[in-house]
Amino acid sequence: MREVVNYDILSAKATAGIGNIILVDDFRHMVASIFALVPGGAAVTVKCQGSIAETAPTFGSAASATNQWEYVEMVDLNTGTATDGDTGFSVSGANDNRQYQVNVDGLRWITFILSGITGTIAVTSKVRLYND
Image (cartoon, rainbow, N blue to C red; front, side, top):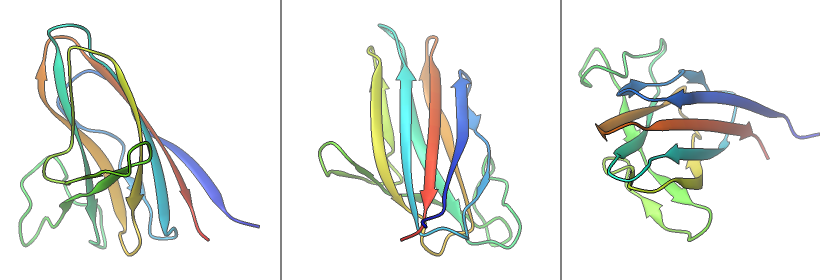
């Protein structure tokens, strides 16, 4: 039987910064559901971050030789469009829900980070991790 685990990374997060950091090195696949409550005039960018470091890096700080992490590409399950990790998923002036496939094969840690916030927003992200 296939092992499946679900986690909440962001729970109605309304401020810039990272969500929960999840240990993913026992899994090859991840699907993320991201719901962004972004009323008129508001905006937010959501990016996925990953690392192969032995201990979780400080994702909210700049990447460096001693704090290694990178933004991770996400593929939209609706359109099949790849979203570059450095670009992320941006929403402005409307609520949006997306589901993304994230390749975590070989990664150890994963999280999401919010940036570019204007106005009042709330972002919720749930992930499903599994193996073949």
